[in-house]
Amino acid sequence: MDMTPENTPLEQSFDLIARQDEADKAITELRGDMDEVKTRLDRVSRAAARPALGRDNPASPEVKGFVDGYLRRGSEKEIKSLSGATPQDGGYAVPREIDAMIARELIEISPIRQLAQVVQVGSAGYRKLVSTGGTASGWVSETAARPETDTPEFAEIAPPTGELYANPAASQAMLDDAAFDIESWLASEIAMEFARAEGAAFIKGNGTHQPLGFLSSPVSLAGDAVRPFKTLQYIGSGDSEGFDTNPEAKLIDLVHTMKAGHRQGASWVMNSSTLSTVRKLKTADGAFLWQPGLIEGQPDRLLGYPVIEAEDMPDIAANAFPIAFGNFKAGYLIAERSATTILRDPFTNKPFVHFYATRRVGGQVLDSAAIKLLKIEA
Image (cartoon, rainbow, N blue to C red; front, side):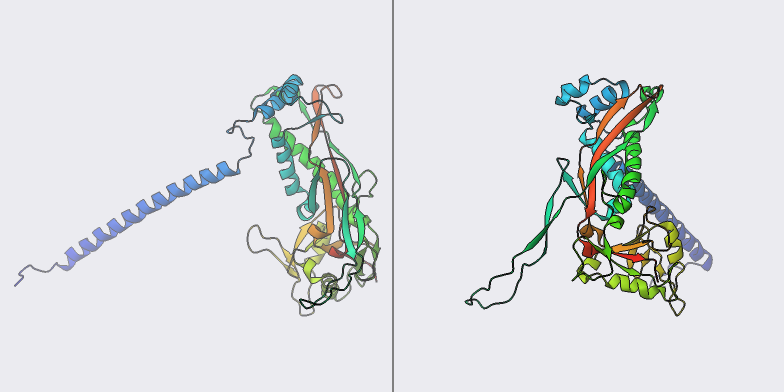
């Protein structure tokens, strides 16, 4: 028989405390390990998100020669020795790494560029044939004769283009500072100016030495079946000064004027002033039409579709088109010559050095059935 006496209540309490201490110690060690893993993951994430031209990454000889030779000191020898380049159209084509930085920032800043179809071209002009109908289809048996199809009809898309330019400036003292990240600064400044100019042109450009904005395209109340090619359909708001007493009905009508295939991937486009009004709209039972994004990174939604703010859209006013709804990937085409050229100008505004950057950009409506407009009218 086991004659070992049982632990007293006091001893049992000490054992429980000891076990609790061991458990707390294990939890503390586990948390420390988790914090270490998280720190390593954060370090890896920051390294992955760091721009390719950061100081921690060695630049290519082309970039180093362009930045240290041409941008900082104005020497053209490094550029010519690397690529045999000569000034084209009043400047040197920037290295691809810097051009990629400009392109990334443009996409983040320019609202319509985020949505539209963008094609890179090697020359100033771009042409594309699109079918406007006529190619028939049908069903037949395996051995039956195939009836002759209708003759296809095509239309040419040739986006009007223009020279987009920016002219940021820095002092020579800034350029002489080795710690000054000139390539990131220059890419950011150029992208900001390009985005401001092209954002307006893609919406309301007149097509003369600049893109033809979708609000500058012809408009009609007619449906897709009878409306001329390149003409956008619009519906009225129901009130000559704004929205009528049933605003959700007009917005729902606008959504469903578009074919179901185009509604997949469609977005609303309006400026912040219009958005302020839309956010206050309610249905007949008092519910807001607006649906805020509940997850970080997810856009706010109106009737289930994301809303994009574009400050160049007009305000709500008589005969204005303050709201667009469309699948801009299918509806609007941006054609650009990928190379950005830069001309260093240290003479015009001493002691500042200007960097005159240019890029050819064009744009116009590609498929008028993919973009719909709301007009303020009775």
